[in-house]
Length: 568
Image (cartoon, rainbow, N blue to C red; front, side, top):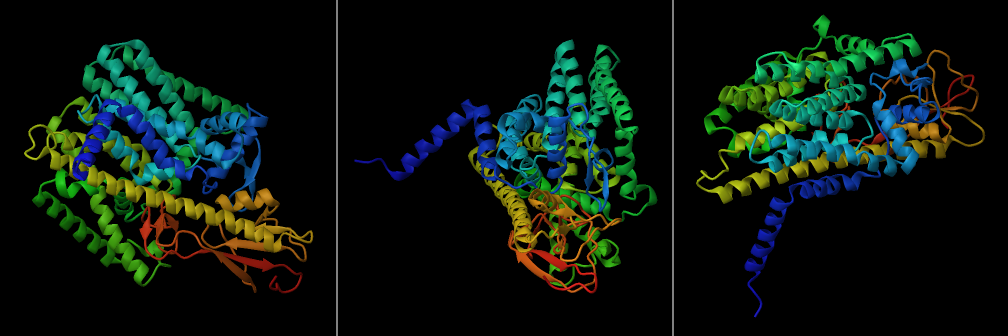
């Protein structure tokens, strides 16, 4: 007689949980591959082309990564003046392409390794902070900012991999008073800073941890000179090659581009909170059950609602998004309120942990989270999901620390507690997958719009000019299209100009035109200015993603004649 179905399911579940408990690292590796595997064929989009073009330059001229021109802002300019990132991620791309090739799948496969390094590094780091390191790593993995960022070939996840392992080696070196782990941490800080300049923020962060845990300056402080010396060498090299200090150029760009010093960013804090709450959604999904008492949660929601009402009522908070009206605007305001609660919860986690423990490790996590948030809200050139990403491992660890005493042996219903945590993680994983899928569909629609543009216009020896950048520029240029130089246009009779409306750096002419569209994501978007989604830049929207009707990718085509323009 067959065993009851419930018993069979129970045995299967017990075996699975035992295997996971016995093999946490393999579990995490499988989770990373399963989560990112569906997106390995994602087309290049957003700033991916800048990194790919730099990698190709490195492949041909390894010692001159930025020695070429690119039209990214409407006219040709040196690459060193366009990019605001150091070149190490592009060196990694060039190395990977030399082995695997230049296809989208090949380069995305190469970037599985940094994603895996972040999650395994978070697991190892969390072992120093809590008794549930697997929960901390999964809470990091199943967040929209991590999954979306891991499906690109930009520098963010690679920088975070160096960052997390630098913190791991630093803490272990401080615990054992061992030189080599500390020196290794210094080297990884240097690599993080050469991948993305924000990595240099590890220097003051780990210096504070060293002072708080050791109470005196000693040999560990010398290891922090390693990244300073490396960055000084980088400054000298870029000054020699390009007659400009690229590090200080990026600092100036970030701090002045956003208008921080002119006080022009009203509501930036609220936007940053919505990005933190949406990008790190696990904190909000867990909040109703475990993180806060009912009174605290109600007070939190009420306070955020009052703040939102005040900002919306003044009419200043969303005036930068004046093109969004009607139901999309009302929906956007409601979603801002929802995710802002999550953002406040993220910051409250860090504050509560310091208040409760008041030790060097709690201060490390709090400064990690708060420093990233302040940089994103006040100093970066724009608020975006990529800037929120560095706090993901710290938030995952804080969640595990907060849940630790509530789901442990003293819990009255430990099985129910584990089940609720799994439900919350599953909800966060589903949301993260849907956001990553919408980003994938957006990139696919952009590539398809470029292909269709060339199919419609790229015949008879006529030039297809275009405005806009990102993936549209990458794929249309690959086919033979030309980026329009606004300063020196070179139209000839019979040429075409294509303008993708959901893009950047646009200045379409007032002339008769033809148009077509390509469908992308339908009910959820992470980058669409018409519904307020701005994962990659808050200038397009005050949310990292938005639920609602997503308009298709619209492409306007102009035919050029010496007289009035006509339809193609």
